[in-house]
Image (cartoon, rainbow, N blue to C red; front, side):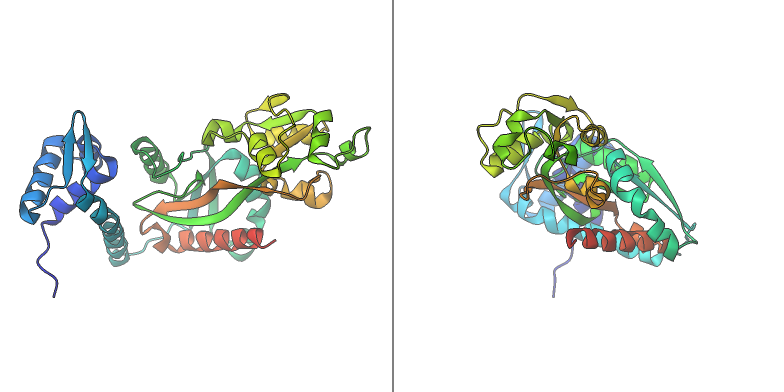
Length: 318
């Protein structure tokens, strides 16, 4: 039989402070003062008879005991939020709002949205184009978490490019990503057709700077290293800050772009763009569907979420 639990407020104060590694951020999240958070954490330490934080100069560090407990506590509060949401009357406005990066919206989501309307004509979908947000490895920072919270105050769902570490949110992986050279078929009929990676030396390299701007990686560097083409100079060429711009440049036969083939699916299927090489380099980042815990219980949100996951599954097995 489990022992008596500590006060719930103390557990919540600790979980928030441990997740943020900041009394101030925890206080902002729980709408109390930092002193109140400190008092609750100290009371919990006294109650349990263990040390939870090492208080450094202007920083908090979790003890080994606290690190072991945090994931289960976060999971528990998430389950509690879902349970409370299930107890409330489930009102549904018949609409769903999704925040998504412009490139993903225009190149992947919008061309498929008519499939959803065909099976759910009663649900209105609102798409809010947002600048892409990623986590650069590890869990979302306090600032990134705040950004996600702000998005989900205005939207039911968010599609994020990152590593999927968003504690406190409901997270579903849509699909993994690869990067590969993509070009117009005109370049295969020119003076220097692309048969081997080394042939890229004769063509302009188009740089989709999405990777550099949001995940700290250059897509050409990733692909050339994985393909073993170390003699191709990836520093040259034209840089474009958006995947849509880079693909438009490739459509105009201005050069060869290294980017996500998933965003060029329609053009690749129609033959307006081609993959000159079969190899695609996997990326650590992926696209994730994120919502507040319990939001998926709403009928319209659940319908859109289920449809989106089914479409993504088809994409991965295509």
